[in-house]
Amino acid sequence: MQSSISKLMRRTASRPALFTASRLSFSLPAHGTPDGELVNRLYAKGSPEWNDLKNSSDAAMELSLNHRQTCDIELLLNGGFSPLTGFMTSSEYNGVVNNMHLPDGTIWPMPITLDVSEEKALEIEKSGAKMLVLRDGEHNPIAVLDVEDIWRPNKQIEAEAVFGGDGEHPAIQYLMNSAGNMYIGGKLHGFQLPPHYDYAELRKTPQEVRSMFAAKGWSKISAFQTRNPMHRAHIELTKKALEVSPDMNLLIHPVVGMTKPGDVDHHTRVKCINAVLPTYPQDRTALSVFPLAMRMGGPREAIWHCLIRKNYGCTHFILGRDHAGPGSNSKGDDFYGPYDARDAAVSAAAETGMNCLSFEMQVYSPDDDCYYPSNDVPVGKDGAPKKVLKLSGTEVRKRLKTGEEIPAWFSYPAVVDILRNAHPPNHKKGVTIFFTGLSGSGKSTIANALCEKLMEVQERRVSILDGDYMRKLVSSELGFSEEHRNLNIKRIGFISSLVARSGGLAIAAPIAPYKVSRDFVRETCEAEGGYIECYVAASLDLCEQRDKKGLYAKARKGIIKGMTGVDDPYEEPKNPEIRIETGNLSVAEAVDQVMDYLYAEGYILREKKENLL
Image (tube, rainbow, N blue to C red; front, side):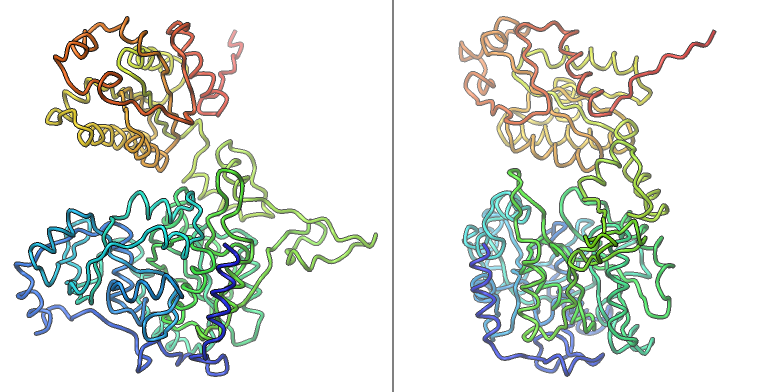
């Protein structure tokens, strides 16, 4: 990974600079456009152009945008992605993937593509459609796309060149498992930006941010991007940026689009930042939110962020440790080096036209009650570097989960309170307990017994989503094809997530034979609370012996088809939280196994008996 990035940086550095640091000012041109103006692909509602577009597209094919595509199209339409005028064509895509440059030589590191399924691409090609109406998740018409190019990308090359190739990288997971296999490119003609109903006063377009800077009289602005709550180390780092010069100002620009799975939601993020804003000089600090769909792409992402902030009118960009990095994989190996992203952006600065403010990780000195860069900790009286403290993100999440103290030197109490409200300890949050296993393994019996036990020992409401009942009520129109079975499980997962979101305990007990739908359930439910997968591992012979419904016997005789374990596969979970071997366990013992896990993980607190006499 590092060798390919370093080669790319050398190629980038060898190109002539587009804008030198000496020309940086508020009049900083938009990136890569011939006249230096922001790209604007929006038509004014009711204008002749808007009416013509509407009339000409009334009978056009439609395409619904997912969350990431909706984030992308907003920044394409409002100029945040200048000089792009639409979703990339294959020539633009190939140049960006292979050497981080558009066909005209303009640096651009991140593919911005509109992915669709093979079936949808074939439908569009057969119809001969020249335009598509793109709609958001609420069916609002957002833009018309000129269909210029439809092609099948080599996703493996994209994964390796853009993100480094580690299959556990979240962007590669998305690319391989969620994104469609075909891409469509072409110019956009915008009806409107995607509607939002939160933080209206903070959702400023690049032009509105530039106008805000002009109104404030700012000509030197440093942008700080974050996908996390701002703790004291972030605050100290951004205040050091203000110290670069007396006329430096600060734009705090948190992401409210897509970030890494597991990050705090954007409402919590913005609330935490609002809580610490009073600690900044008010005449030199501004807050605006940023609808980016992050890719967590490390080096390339850092360069991308610089270019976007250039379009927002900023002159400087703050870069610290592991900027836009997704952390480490399951083996504990970091996807990127701690300063790969920072160094990549600095190497490309002459070409991007942005000043990069590079900072080391900030660490806390209890002796001095202040933060120092990790490479500049002063020595104490004994001649040794002073003792410093730091808390990792993993440790903070653990303390939120358990309710342990988060010290005031790490984060302001107001921020911690917001985080605790948004992320209560395990014994106060909703949980999904998802049983999976063959028919006859004992899932439903254990689930029902567990429900009774949970009602006895804790106060949260408990809901059971039994596979048979779900089939009769929620999924009665579905058959037993692989597609329908996956859809049934996804419905169960979605309902379970709603129960958990409301603070309840959801117990689901379907067969759930396929990994893909179980993965969907895990991701959906983990976003709303705790998630525990329980694999009820009974042998096929044992399940057939227990078969009260006679399903296996009918399957063996060919009376029914597609019986899991007989003529349809069961994909065994590889890493469930709990594996229950029911062959030699009583129901009570199986329940105890689940309860022991719930106690150990703090989802239930052991009751302390008090002497009330």
